[in-house]
Image 1 (tube, rainbow, N blue to C red):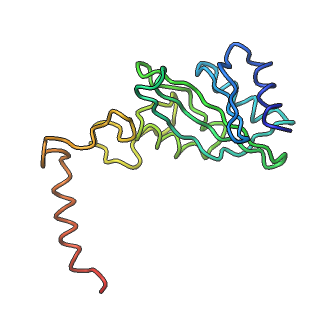
Image 2 (cartoon, rainbow, N blue to C red):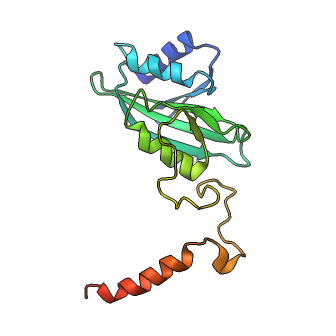
Length: 178
């Protein structure tokens, strides 16, 4: 089945949820409202002729200053059986940066949802273990947001663990292989 046909099926079944269908270089993206994302994902996973049984990727996007809503969660889905692919984009407003989890549909979404939470600040409602995965627990902010400061005027007070990491790095230099 062609990606355009899959997009049409989504539009037919969830007409009020589809904001746009776009195509770029042969890749089709269905842009959705976030409210029924779990129901739509269950449809894509559980419908035999679609059978999107593999979540290739889930990531966040920040369109700060370019469009509203500013944030998106992007899902790349693949059917191993049918060998077709679709991109689903769910818009997430900054004021309510949350969306339903899909980890109960695809177990592999666990890490992706945690990473998206950590780096973009998007909360996945009902996630079994939503905590930082790349940044330290005491880190403030979300580094992949476009308004995240590149530098700080706080100097060494920037992150409490910074000096500890520097000292550890100096200590470990003695063990470098030459």
